[in-house]
Length: 341
Ligand code: CUA
Image (tube, rainbow, N blue to C red; front, side):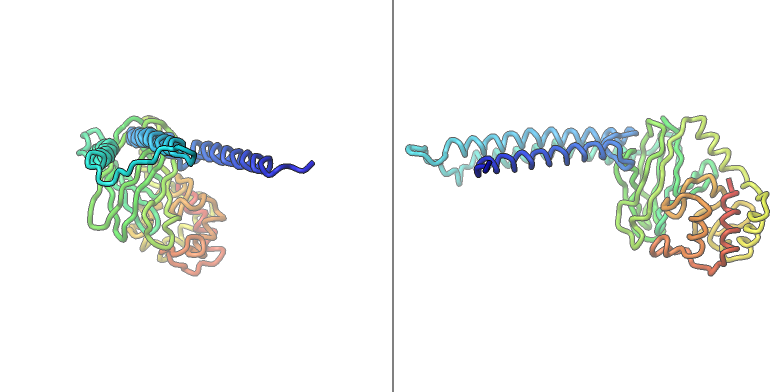
């Protein structure tokens, strides 16, 4: 059987529609489940942004229906046929020009007013009960300091659910942008300036974060995790972080400590009671963190050995130097770091 041209066209249209449906539904599901999702807000800040997103979506849907409706009506009304009405030229019609200029100014106000309100609301002076966290954006990793608690960590920020957190953001090198999609929008992290971000996490969980401003070679590798705990779990985490790091017990880890203290590692990394370097991440409780190197790799012995022996191969542009460690030395250091619970 030979299909007519119209039949073939109909089949193609159906296939195209089917493709669009498959594509949009798959987009929808990955948006929902993705660890970087913005459409499942987990904080007050996230909810406010989601509300603006919905407001913009509905407003633009109404505009779309009005404009497309008018277009379709005009196409049908003035279609080419005997005795069709001639469309009237509206050039120079002052009331019309004014009304559609004002209409779009109103649309901008509908979007702009709540947006600006939230920008200011998330920078207000925090309440005395707020948890203060200093965020330092380095090329290419994140440092988190809790000044009231005397805790410093890297690449993982721990927060208690239901308590307002006041982030103070600054960068010693170049501009970065602090972004935890599930907890809300971005805020720039700028050298020579302290920016503020205030929010209250509402659901416990582990959320992915990412630097959202191009900051050099490993910008895309400048990731982190935000871990929102119950209040009790958070207090336990703080206690564990405040304690002195565990002394290594097995021989390889002991040997690793020895290598660490005798190498230039100590110039950059702090380990409470062992070294006081400030340039790289604080390693006092390295093994309490699931990932390292800008949250790029899981904290396993294999990854650590590869990292110590060739940092810039694992994270392009990494500022940690290759110290030419041998296999035995790097394995020992990895064992030591993994003993620092
Ligand atoms: Cu830091 Cu991009």
